[in-house]
Structure formats: C-alpha cells, structure tokens
Image 1 (cartoon, rainbow, N blue to C red):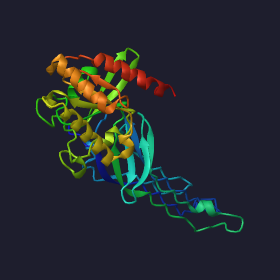
Image 2 (spheres, rainbow, N blue to C red):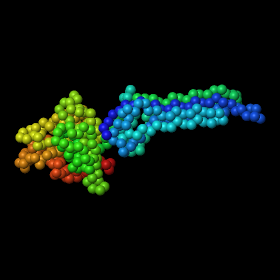
Image 3 (cartoon, rainbow, N blue to C red):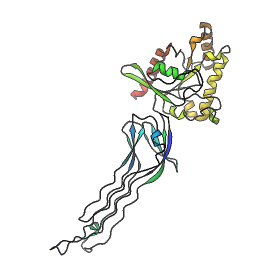
Image 4 (cartoon, one colour):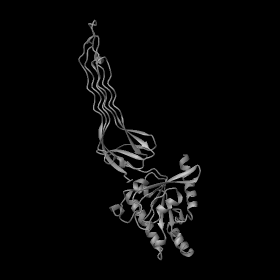
Length: 340
C-alpha cells in the first residue's frame, strides 16, 4: 500500500431540520392549537483513531465528505430525526488543520479517540414552541441552521519512541530489522526506503519501545534534494534520535565519517532547530567491514570530535553485533520518561 501522510478533503456537517408549522385538527376538538414539532439536529463530522491504519491513502480521493442532515419536524409535536454523524477513521498520530486558516483543530493520539472537526447544524423550532397565554395560535417557526463546512488538512506524524536518521544506505533499515520484528526492504543501493517504517523492539516480555525509520537525508535536503525534508515530521514526537553512520564507506579516510555526521546535523538544524537539539546518539554501523585497528581509529576520531556530548555505539546491524546492548540502553533511557 502506498504511504500517504498528508491529504486535504472538504467536509460538511449536516444541516439542522426545519421547524414545522402545524395546527391540531381533530373532530370534536374545536380548539386543537399549534402542534408543529422541532427539526432534528444535523450530523457532525468526527475523526476516529484506528490502530489498524498507518496511512491516509483512503482519503486521498475522497471528494466531499458529508454528514446527514436532520429531518424536518412534523405535526403532532413530532420531532424530526437527527442526522447521522459521519465518522472518518484515521491513523493514530493524525493532526487536523483548517486548510484555509492553518488553525490546528486537534490531534488524534490514541486508538478510539474521537475528534470533532465539523459540528452539525442546530435544529429549527416548530410553532408549538411559541404558544403562550397571549398567542394561542402562533405561526412562527425557525429554520434549521447549516452545519459547519471547512477544507480540512490532515497530517500524519507517526508515534514512535525512537527515530532513525542518516544518509542513504547507512543501514537504518537493517538496524530496524536487527532490533525489532519489522521487515523493511533492504538492498545495496541508496534510497531503498521510500516511506517511513515502524517496528516494535522487545527488550523483555513487558518492556518494549517503538522505532521509526525514515528515508535517508542527503546534503541539500532543505532545498528539496533527494526526498527533501518531507518525512522528517515523523520524528517530531520521538524521545530519542539514533543517527546511523556508515563507517565502512569512509575508508581509507576516516574524516568522511565526521562529514557524514555534520551533514545530517546541518539538515536537521535547517528543518527544525528544536529537533536538532533533541537527544541524538551516534550509531557507527558496518564495523564488520573494518579491521580491529581501523575500528578503534574511527571510534577514537568520533569521540575526539564529539567527546561526551553524545553517546557513541559501534554495531553491525547485519549480524546483530552490539544491537542487543544498544536496545537495552535505549530502554533504560526511555523508562524514566514513561513513568513521569
């Protein structure tokens, strides 16, 4: 299924039903009086979080989504039937904006959460409502009110504890495979990952965390190079970033590792300075392709440049070397946050 993380749809809540103008007419009852009923309330439009969805593709060509209008009132003081609400199922992590004003209406953050995005119109009143001691035969009614209508922009931000980022072909998808049960596509060429992937890492039976892998960034992503910054929004809710670096491609000059790290840091800063300041660990991947001496040299070079400002892990995602310890340390880092 194609991954779609932003759509714009027109939504219309239902109109309220009109009030009824009616007088009771029965044999042997000479003074029947007004008996016009109220109209029904128009149906509203709500979003519903669905844990089984991970894309907005079902809404891409939805056209106009309308809730049902309320039924008009009837004689005998019978109230019109309320219009049925329209429920739109969306993935957990969806934000709803008014596309014309850019106002944030709300977010759907948990499964089965409901978010009202367009309220149905109020009911009209029948003439029975207006009878009084001085007006025994009112002919006044009110019409139903129109429901809210808006152009709705939906954006999906995946909910994950940990986000993977790095240059293309750094081994992010392989690392996702190594520490979770996810099985993203892996191949020996850049931009294998074209859309975000999620996986659940299970450290113990009751200790887990969610990992998000996004397509690789390249120099100039802020200007639209490669896939640009399109998918960086999916790291906005993560608590920890893992910056995956391919150390094998830096040989024989280890300084290429520092260039790769600086490139991603620069693109993060251009996209969102707050995201760039988030806790970010360096994961030096593909150490199996280096000799012990080369491995130690590149680790020392990175430590000399970054010191203790960021934890540094050396792993081989392909065979799992170092991945178990990395997962355990991630769990230890996240647990205090989940308890607060």
